[in-house]
Image (cartoon, rainbow, N blue to C red; front, side, top):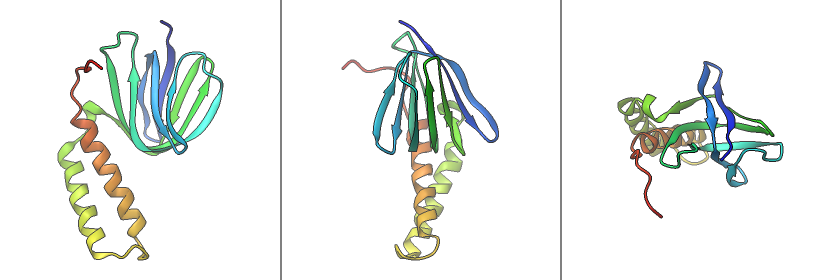
Length: 142
């Protein structure tokens, strides 16, 4: 198997750097799996889980990526995002607090209210962080 160098970068710096066999992301157009030597593309990303699959198929790294872009060249993949966290770096208590706050905001707002879309995004990011942190490290048999 071959690998491709992959970086996840935020304004605060690199969140991830390594060589992986496959990167799985959710672009705004749908799920996308990128292997080494993929055609060059740039695609906008959803707030979603990113899976970084290594040559050892039992080793997968997980990142909660809060939107942004994926840039693919033949020998490198770069994910650029305003915020991203690797599974083991997620502060679950902080994410649960953010979820509770966002749910409380949404209960008080109407879909057309100022701040509604922002509260929805906050809720989506907090749920992503919580679900990413809860992923078990073992790979299940399909």
